[in-house]
Image (cartoon, rainbow, N blue to C red; front, side, top):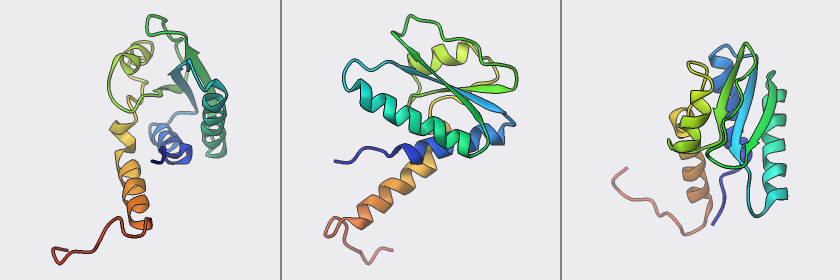
Length: 133
């Protein structure tokens, strides 16, 4: 099993923020209870990707879903670090009405699907060509 690489979702996140005219992105996630160092490494890499694409970037990790995230600075968007809609994305977006990217699948679905297909095709014997295509 492979995990979704940071560059796949982070580059889609940065592209979406730029497409919406943002000058910065406030990434809002939940603090990990285990593997904290790995989480921080991944999120630092995501922030670096956003900066390399010309955005300012800040990371906010909430201690729990009851914690209210801050409003992003003027000209920034909020990006909940959630794949699907749920309480994290709702909470993050409530702090930035009209300036929230929403969950990753709303704008990164095609990039994620392309990565899944590429991974499946790169595994020998995992997919066999059919006559249907």
